[in-house]
Picture 1 (cartoon, rainbow, N blue to C red):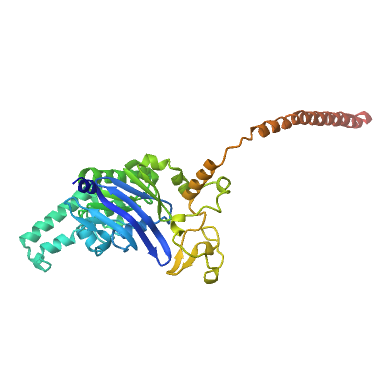
Picture 2: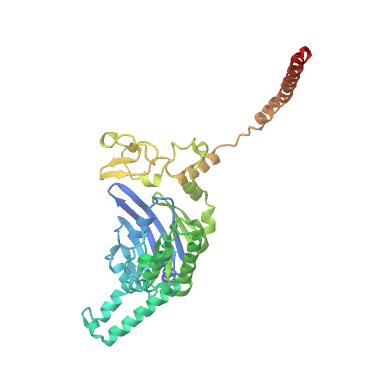
Length: 398
């Protein structure tokens, strides 16, 4: 019973998730949990694999390995990787938005929210044309759908423009409308892919208010991808950080924001701080399964790509086929770990005497500068006195 109760505390459990595209390992052995009724943020640099995780959860991709378990409030459990993609929103109650806004721009705001409820309306019509004849069951379902749509338009502060085309809305309002449309499906897990992208501070504040209202009043859990750290730190209860498809940090916002591995992944590490370990650092968890060394004869030549080093360092060949891995030194978080390990293994040597002995050498230079200035001043005075008699000679002749 205790195990069952603890499992129900988490709406989503991601266990050893891996996603491979041919030889490219986009997600490698990722595990985390999203607690029910909380906002969980999935953050990381561009290309870390965040959207790929969303696509696996919502059925756009089928994972290469791992389990995605969703626990609903009624006690039912679904393995998302086994469900057909159209059944994930219908049965598991998972909804999502996208990085690019995907509204029906020619339809009104109200119609956009009614489209999200088409399954309920089709069921009320008996999947036939009975709705055209005004059957009571369809009239009731239609009225309920309109009420729900107006409810979320009010929550998104858009009810005054219910009859306007969605394409006429400002960008921030379109973002809120997209979230309202997703909520009309009645989700238990709402996945938002960079909802604050491109918003100004006022629009970001309105978005925060909407998300906190969803969290506090509907019981819907939110899984959020976001680059705006002000949004993440203000509203998130739990943060998971990815780098090159690997989890490098997991915890509350306060602990994550001070994690040196997270800081290194976002801001980088100074070359002089890690030059002693750059050649030794790599994402060993990614490359440990490879049995053979790089075979440059079957790969392209050297490249000046974003991952430093030749392509032969990133492309390796094994018996099961080509594998593409993170090149050595690419993972900033791994560099921080390796540097900390190297510092701990070496005794600290003080260089203070050398610094003290070098300080007095620079002091005597100031008098020389003053003497040269005095010489320059006396020389200029001599020139002025020499110029005065020559200026008076013409006057004497007159």
